Image 1: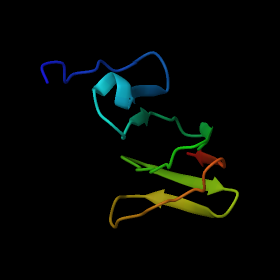
Image 2: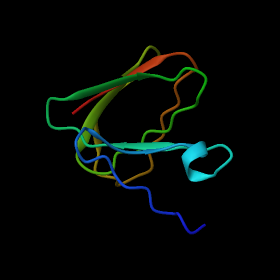
Image 3: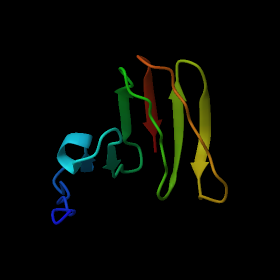
Image 4: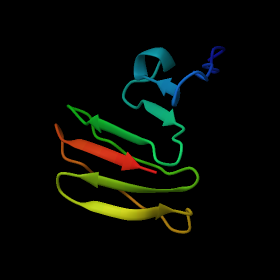
Length: 92
């Protein structure tokens, strides 16, 4: 428990990358990205479930199954579930 701080990666859009292995956890990991207006991030879920949380600003999110426009403002809870082995993309 003494090593709770994992330094951010400030030189790229991914500023935090926490895995179960580097955090000493069993299941959950997370990543934090800072995207500029007009920038996009696309990833594939592979064998992992994905939870996307917009911390600030607004974004459009799309997958093979559905899409959402102009999400953000954290006024209400918003959930996104993407099937395994499918790509998702965020545009800001």
